[in-house]
Amino acid sequence: MLPEQEYQMWPDATLLNALRQDDRKAFEMLYNRYSGKAYHVAYNLFRDKVVCEDLVQELFIDLWTKRNSLNISSLEWYIKVAVKNKVLMYIRTQKATLDLSAIAMLTEKYTTDSKLHQSEIKSILEHNVERLPERCREIFTLSRKEYLSNKEIATRLNISIKTVENQMTIALRYLRTGLSDYLPIVVAAIIIAAEN
Image 1 (cartoon, rainbow, N blue to C red):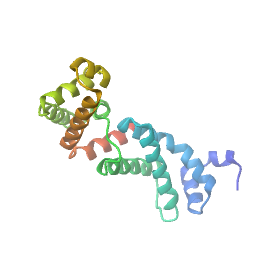
Image 2 (tube, rainbow, N blue to C red):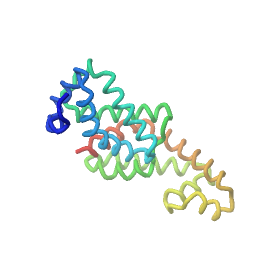
Image 3 (spheres, rainbow, N blue to C red):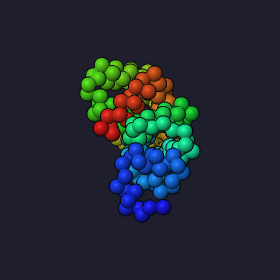
Image 4 (tube, rainbow, N blue to C red):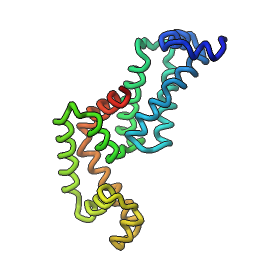
């Protein structure tokens, strides 16, 4: 095994070749080089530290498991695609939920070249918020537009915190369902743009 400093100097292609030959140090260098970027992208979508750490671990476990059969020309591109696929899988299996305010902000930030998608998604979100039951819409609006905590909402509306939590769960589930056709496009655009 070579000294760590030498591995650090290697380009991705050399590290990938070493990885294919079961070199754990090469894997460690690739992990150190790309795990932070993968975590950052996932965190921008989920805003949940534990979920993002799990996602990154799964991504690199897959990389190690498939190391002998992978045909990767660009590790950076492979990581982007793998993160996108993991994010979409987590959403589909409801292993994690998107932070809708983060999606709205990131969509606006990273899709300036796609104003049609941006305004369409915003319109769908607004339309779906309007279709929420009155109390549910009021709680959602206080949370996401006035940035009140669940406790502050409960106090203002004279209801229990549990009721606020339940209504937010209902609202978020409904809004995610309304955006489900657009999620792959949005997630892909955000992941690709966020890494550039």
